[in-house]
Length: 226
Length: 236
Ligand SMILES: Nc1nc2c(ncn2[C@@H]2O[C@H](COP(=O)(O)OP(=O)(O)OP(=O)(O)O)[C@@H](O)[C@H]2O)c(=O)[nH]1
Ligand SMILES: [Mg+2]
Picture 1 (cartoon, each protein chain N blue to C red):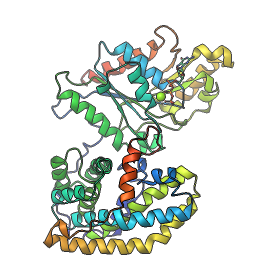
Picture 2 (cartoon, rainbow over the protein chains, first blue to last red):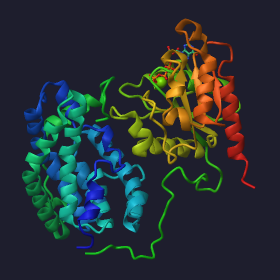
Picture 3 (cartoon, rainbow over the protein chains, first blue to last red):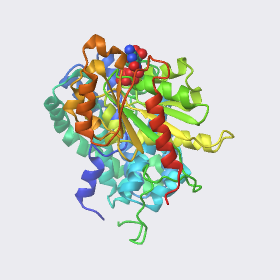
Picture 4 (cartoon, each protein chain N blue to C red):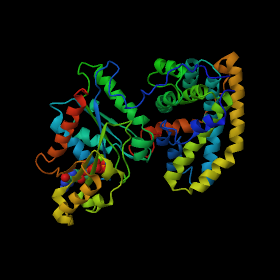
């Protein structure tokens, strides 16, 4: 393993300037629909997202960090993202992350991906390749992706509901053991994907997140971009 | 596993607004940010600047609406510029983050506009105006996003704002005090505002405007022309 944990802290910092602050990870739609109203329902929402879209994203990130062809992973990410709105979001965020990553950890692999996907590759793939450029391993990349899957919605719900920020942070802390577990599963799948290709990666999804993402994209007034 | 790239891989600093040149070596468009409190007249200033300069300059606008596309739609509805010259960026309830702490979405919008026009028969842009969502007195633009910034306040927001200072009032390249036509109605002391602004800003310029007046944007337009002249003149 190249780098120690410090690079992971830089990468997973909520202030890493890669555009995440403008996105709620589906939380805005869930709040509007009355499915997230307090800390308990936020925890349910985050748990659901972690084990579905979160696991898929973590596995893609881990595979990219493990050296699996990022373009093949980008196609695999498309196949795992049926909602056009979420595909667009993932690519937009991937492009923004590419910009930040190339400034933070210059790397020929990031340059090559940026050249091959000028409009942006899927964000988890870029995240994984960024982890690789930072000298981090697949498990680190999976942790970063899995954490993002829950920290984004939690931060958004603090803004959307005026939820007590201490309660929101406690939700994330309670989810930490499950997050570790999801990251390990993702890294294990990534190890297989090195030999078997992207088909070895999990393809979990949350249909309600896909459906509400499409609806949310059509709202005329919203606080978050997704 | 270790880093794939050896230490000889050069450090790059070309991913911010820092470089004034386009890939083809020519000077890119000047980027001017407009920030300031909600409702002070940022969009009205952008609209007036576009109307007044669009015959002589190729202009594009990026709006940072907080939760709607109102500013972009206002500019479209009023046919200030054709739609391909206006881009709306979404800021996730946090306008100052999008112009300062995490400028990635705005930079992408800037570069997309530049790329589209450079590769079209229209040719490259001269000026890109970036309007921030209305925010507080501490909201300023990153130097990585814009080359110069205008902070717009208005007399109705309280004539003590220049005295209070804050990063916007104190450091912006141009401070605009707008809606001077309303001064008599809100009891604003314009001379006091000018004195306070000078105390805060030293030699940095201040423009008093009323956009309801005929050619009320003139002082801002003249300042923009000056910035452009300095921008396009190669350094000696
Ligand atoms: N009387 C007067 N009204 C003005 C002037 N400039 C702008 N307004 C009005 O003030 C209101 C707000 O102006 P905008 O340009 O939308 O303000 P803004 O700073 O873009 O507002 P946000 O983007 O919402 O923060 C509009 O109704 C304008 O018509 C002025 O010089 N005098
Ligand atoms: Mg406005």
